[in-house]
Amino acid sequence: MVRMTQLRFALAQIDTCVGDIHANAKAIINNVRQAATQDANVVVFPEMTLTGYPVEDLALRATFRREAWDIANNVAEQLQAEGYGSLYVVCGTIGTDPDEEKPRNRLVVFHEGVVWAGYDKHFLPNYGVFDENRIFSAGDKALVLDVDGVRLGFAICEDLWRDGLPISELEHEQIDTLVTINASPYEEGKRHVRYALAASRAKQVNAPLIYVNQVGGQDDLVFDGGSFVIDQQGTLLQRSDTFVESLDYFDFDSQKNEQTVSTIAAERSSDEEVYVACVLGLRDYMRKNHFTGVCLGLSGGIDSALVATMAADACGGENIWGISMPSMYSSDGSKDDAYDLAQNLHAHYEVQAIEPIFNTYQNQLHLSGIAQENIQARIRGVIVMAYSNSHNLLALATGNKSELACGYSTIYGDAVGGYAPIKDVFKTRVWELSRWRNNIAQQGVGVGQLRMVGSENIEPSGESSVLIPVNSIVKAPSAELRPDQKDSDSLPEYEFLDKVLAAYIEHAHGRADLLADGFDEKTVDTVMRLVDRAEWKRRQYPLGPKVSSLAFGRDRRLPITNAFKE
Image 1 (cartoon, rainbow, N blue to C red):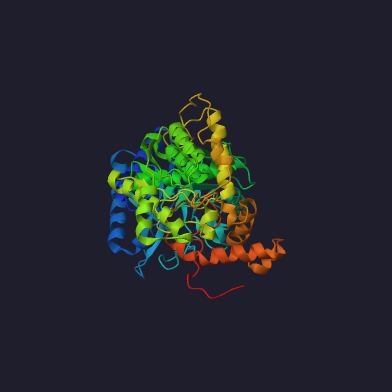
Image 2: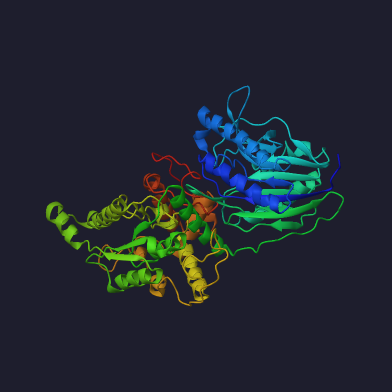
């Protein structure tokens, strides 16, 4: 047999759907076909490609595991039948522990018509969004595969993040390349952490490292892709684009001390990353759950304006039903801003005044104070859900992370919906993202023209105009539930509030820590009280994409009934 020193790797960064095993298998086969036309020898897919990820308790169903394994064998046989059997196709799926009958997160290789080799993940994440220790069993040894004379070592995602096996074993195996398949969710700033970690592991095994990551939205997670190759000196050799499906290539030569640099995709700005992550999360939630349109309340405020604009980028303005629901307290400016936004997005726009319905409630209930304010929000929630039911639309909640943290929303009112695109975005960041989207709109990037799946080849339209009315960005935020109401009547100014919230929520600073951070005692006590007593509301809030290091939901699990006070 002729020993090769050169291998062409295809990095298949694809978007899969949990449980749609047949569609995922079809995507695998299509990508292998395309990679073969570019003379690839090894095609690498992300973690649990065949099943989608994360599968959560679906992994515990034996029927699910059997179907995944049967289809894996079918894929191997079909690739052989079509003439691609000589390729080595590295794929993630689910396996079963032979002793404990528990599921395993497994890497397999399709070659010559069979599922040719396997490797089970060693480390199971049990933090943040992951809770895999109770679901999966771990592997017991590292895998090294000889591919035509080139020695490949393998790891699965979490194996890189922990010391010990398999990396410690691969240190002594004299591998030529370390291949790691991943389903690593997006959070702002994580990209550079991955590079640093990969560089250290490449140095540890003295070989280049190939990192292939999943892309796409899955419920409240967004996977950003950004697959890459890095050598043992820390040099970036290849980088795929983020938030898009891609099939990229890296040529490896075991006889060269320095590998050739391949295509390196441009990095996105921080604002673009967060914005596109929110859009991708919404778009994939709609697509994978068979929604073609959305509805939401348009108040003229910045939150609903940003959510509507994200929705337009996700599914097109013509698929948005914006509902203006003015009350007796709504200003003419807010109504004008809502109308202008709908026109800019080419969205459906309808007005449903709530005062007649409110008067009916008042004639019977005679409400005052907070009850009178909340009934207005709940009337609006009923209208939004009526549009959702009657038009088969996904109802969007428009609350941001600052409001969600402090309980500054009405349960069964403005908190209704099936998806909340900005629930992990602080209010100050809402303004920043809105300005960013207007800036690129002025550069000619219209609705639906972001660098995303299916639109990467679209040229800017050339039209130069803002999407979000400037007045929605600059005016003082208000729920407009009583005369001259401002958010600042009951909350600290957002610029200051968000700093306290970030320290308390994302960095888990307690009262003493917050005071040591320099925040004043009155504000600290107010913010902690608001956050702690709103836990019950957050449990009932719609899911939305995680974009920060710690999002409400999977990341932060605190008891609702909690007597601990600082």
